[in-house]
Structure formats: C-alpha cells, structure tokens
Length: 164
Image (cartoon, rainbow, N blue to C red; front, side, top):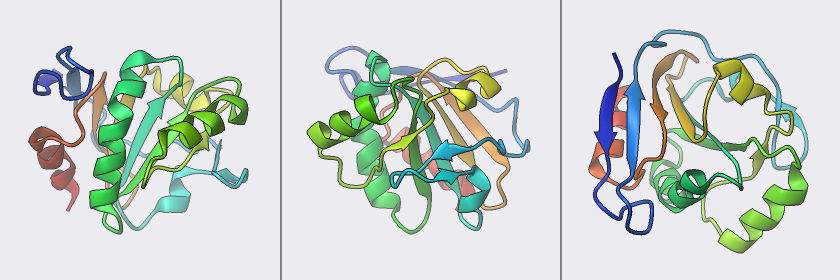
C-alpha cells in the first residue's frame, strides 16, 4: 500500500501544502526501455544512465504541481551531482517549442531539458503528473512518488538516500 508523504506547508507550492504518495508496489521492476530525447536532441533510454542511481521526474509545463516542484528538484539535482542522475523528462506534446523557453526562463542550475513529446513514458507507467521514480544503479525501481514533492526537504533526502 502506498505511503502518504507531505512536504512542509508552502515548500513547493507557494503556500499550499504539497502532498505526494509514496508507492513501493513496483519495487524491483526494470526501467522502461522506451526512448526519449536528450538536451542535444538525441534519443536516449534509461539504460544509457546505468551505473549510478537515476531519479526520473515526469512533468509538463502545463502541470501546476510539476512547475511548482521544479525549483526544489533543481536544488536536489545540484546537491546530488555525481551521485544520482536527476532526469526531468517533459511530457509536453509540443516538445522543444514549450520546454526550451521554460528552461531558459527558469534558469535552472542542474536540471537539463529532456523531452518525451509522445508522452510514451507517462503512458507506459500509467502516470499522472508529476510522477518521480527512483531507480538503483542497476536500473531497478526503488519507489515512485505520485504527485508533487518538496525535493529540497529532509523527507526527499531520506528517500533518495535509500539507493546510496
């Protein structure tokens, strides 16, 4: 049964309480083999990041909880640099036309604009946005966070530390 996890009031939503549901029902499942697009426009798969843990965030520019959590996800990515790969993969059907201006405006320090313009990952995972999935270094799922999360908070740090 999924565990409910909440962020401190105002943490990721500008005043509203951020709430996510921790789902461990898929623990041990292999990562998807579907392709998505890297920042240079080349196709990649999650297997291309094997050898270190991966935190996969499925999001879209039109998703308010997704946009609200992005600054804390960027801060987490900066802190985890070299230890865990953080992939923010946009599910925007418009692809680069929407995602690139969003990233330029946001001026993220660590996140890069990965894209899945067919939303294939969201469909494969039957995921509502945002959904964030932690994989271990061998590409097996540890947990999923369904919904927004304060990725800069202590709860997120404890969850991500499960793969170190």
